[in-house]
Image 1 (tube, rainbow, N blue to C red):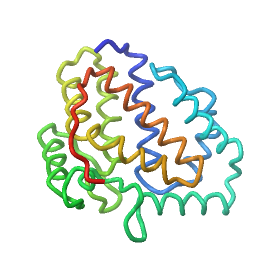
Image 2: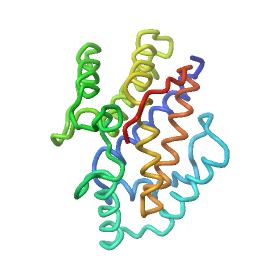
Image 3: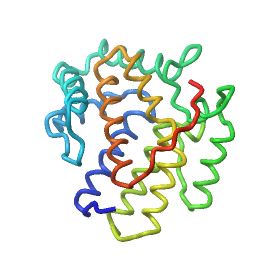
Length: 221
C-alpha cells in the first residue's frame, strides 16, 4: 500500500461521509453540511476519476443545488430512504450483508455472526443507536472510517493495514456493490442515486489501493 498520510485522511473522510449518509435516515443537518461544503464541486482527488465519477457528482450536485431544506424535500428523502432500506415489505436495496450472501436471504445470518466475530477478535467496539443487524452497510463504513483513521495516524502499520484488508475483502466488498447497485437502480432522488454511484467508485478505488483480488461469491439478491 502506497497511500500517503495526507491522502489517508481524505480517504477516511470519504468513508465517514458514507457512514453518515447510509447508517440512518436522512437528516437536514447532514444534507445542509454537504451543501455548505460544496462537496459535489470539491470532491477530493483520491484516484477516482472518469465518466462514472462525473455522473455521480453531477447527480449529487444537482440535488444539493436545489436543496432548500423544506419539509417537502426532507419528506421525499425519507420516503426514498424507506423504500430502499426499510420497507414496508421487502426493502429494494436491503442494507444488510447476510441478505445478499445467504440462501435463502436472511437477516442476522451466519455472515452477520462472522462480522461480529471479526469485530470481537480485532477489539473493535461500536455503539449502535438502534437494533439494526450488525452487518448494516452504514455500520461497516463506520468501522472502515475508524480503521482508516488509525492508519492515517500510523501509515506504516502492517497490522492496521491487514485489518482494513480483512474488513474489505471478507465483509464489505463481497456484497456492498450489489446493494449500492440496487440503490442506484431504484432510488427516486438524485441524492441517493448520486451517493450510490460515488460509493461504488470509492470501493473500487479501495480495492485497488489495498490490492484486494476480486473474489466472486454467489449473491442471492
